[in-house]
Image 1 (cartoon, each protein chain N blue to C red):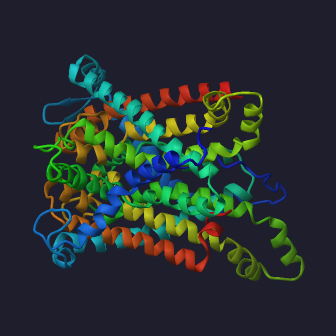
Image 2 (tube, each protein chain N blue to C red):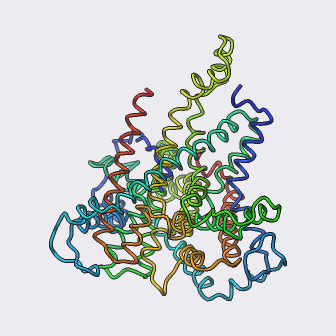
Length: 263
Length: 296
């Protein structure tokens, strides 16, 4: 029977998983190489390239820039996306469906096209290579996800729960503080984490609008990989992956992932 | 990226809440401004610039022209770009499907304890930047890379196989980058597959190939269609992996958009190619919706 868990089928699946994980599995040991160039397995082991990375002006600065941008994008994205999702879910008005489609449409545009389109506008607005420009560009990528997640979150909170609290004498402020916010928390955290990760990893659109003085970490890695092949990229990659895993771990510990995703 | 394609259905919004319009506007305004500045305006400007005449060196004029498109369709190089991109799109989609289908089928059959863990492993590469994964492939496939190293030290080959800076390398990298997307789409469509159908077919005398072709495949077809659409669209517009693993020797629509816009500064040309990519997207979407209609 095709697809029964026979030994050949298990082996085939194991090979595909090996293929799928190969690039990640190779980068980790390589980052602990002490060689001047890429050899595998490394001839000597150590933390040389991690030290080099933190003293490399470009990477250290880019890490900080990426972090600042990702945090700002996360906060602003929630500030803009949550009220919009609330209005779309809870209010009746003409053009509701149109607005939802408009707000989530950037997801459908390939990032290479969106990157060029944003470049064409930002070059006129003198926003190229500025924090403002990068933050606005990243917001257009993260907010569709924030809106989608928050729509789901608001739909799991029936207005009747809030009405019940009001009927029992709670002030509007108390209702928000004791009922709405706690029930919304998983949605907020999922949106925030996803926004941070998307912004922190975004590379194509950033490539179009970063300037020589303001470069995000993925752009810096991209340029470095294009011109050099030494194990430093592996060390930077491990830091990038570790940062991602740390965020997911924190969410898992505070909420549980499945709860956050909204199952 | 277009990872979330399912639309969120509207709940029956309570109509009884009367809202002052200014409150509604205040709720929607920040999002509307972001959307306008970074999406609506750029897309309009992209469309306009694709019709603007440019002088040499990328200086924009105020004249509108169809020349950018005419140049594109009469240039043999751009026809090559389109065909390269389409071959990559179809080829990568097909190979990705062949790799992801066994994974999805395995996850469907395996016990729930293993399923959750393997599911996390399947989607975990999505959390790793495509730059990092492509770099990993450069380390593995390069002339002095891991793969060539193993083959040469074991004496199977004398000189390294050319696995990067060419189309083969781009294919390998793209397939790996896209497997999680395909697997997710397939798994979403595998819900309809139940063992009783296969048992019924078996009891009626169908051999395993017939059962696969007549029972498993039709039941999982909607997932296959969705996964193929997603992978085709993502591979047509992918830029990072072709640029790095192609080493500047693989010419695609997406890499050409970047080169024209950032290196040549020929924005009208880049804009015209972008519009053509969007048209290919539209066609793919149209084919998909026709295919899906036939399933119902």
